[in-house]
Image 1 (spheres, protein in one colour):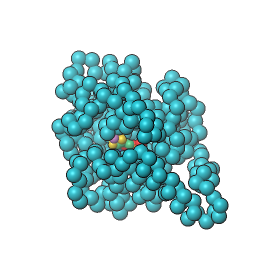
Image 2: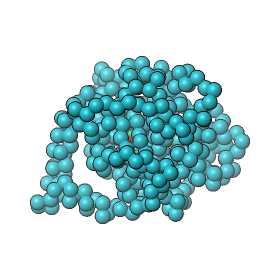
Image 3: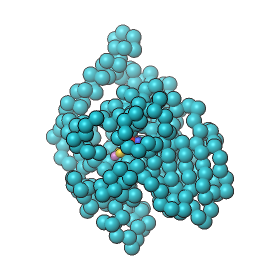
Image 4: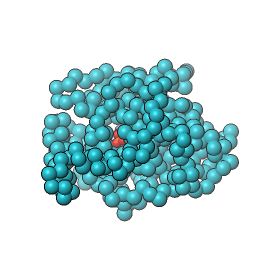
Length: 320
Ligand SMILES: Nc1nc2c(c(=O)[nH]1)N[C@H]1C(S)=C(S)[C@@H](COP(=O)(O)O)O[C@H]1N2
Ligand SMILES: [Mo]
């Protein structure tokens, strides 16, 4: 496979928005026709989907929600990065349909007192599920606003009683090329891995998401369980997590391993530190259309008041 643009700049990224939206429309029409619903429109197909999966309706946490207008469900679930299902933005929605996120077990291990393999149901605390509208910013300089449903990662981590040696938390995505066709290509070193410093992991903004728009996460969004860290570039938000490990040393992370000069461990959104191949000073808001102005990228993606103190005294050019 030839990839003339290198990681994170693929032909799909330079497809004009209008062409992309057209392709979506064609896809949606094709889907509705295939559903044997006669005069069905894409909207009724979406409504049927909603009825089947509308079970994560949760109260909105206003303290941790932005007031920006959220992107549409279709934008959020039709324009994704999930290389296990292909590198094009429309690949995950198309190729993750047969993925089976149930039953699901997550292994918790490393520097903690309680460890083992746990069914997803035992990991979740449904009574603490809440909706949070977060700004999301991809390292490729596009952004969305997403109403996640989930719970703070800290709530989960505390139950496993990390020891004083737990300086970092490492996360691993499922490794199963039978279900994840993208893993047959060596685009990345599978499985996808990510990590956070323990104080970042324990920060109240760090969310484990299980839903979006009140619905169970669709496969392309990282079902059944994915990380959301809104002040960091999107690649930190590892999807379809099967392992959470407390570790003493800074863990390996997929993108910094693939291209250490381009992607760092911290990956805090920072308009002052450009990616070596493009500017990080502005972003294209998905759904804004072809003529929409790019918007300025904010330090820590706008969450500086909450998280800047975590990095006091650190040179953020060096620890990018
Ligand atoms: N396992 C896994 N997690 C992943 C990725 C991936 O390729 N594999 N892509 C990351 C990137 S680059 C981004 S921008 C976000 C996108 O999340 P979204 O599709 O829900 O918007 O997922 C992140 N999590
Ligand atoms: Mo990304």
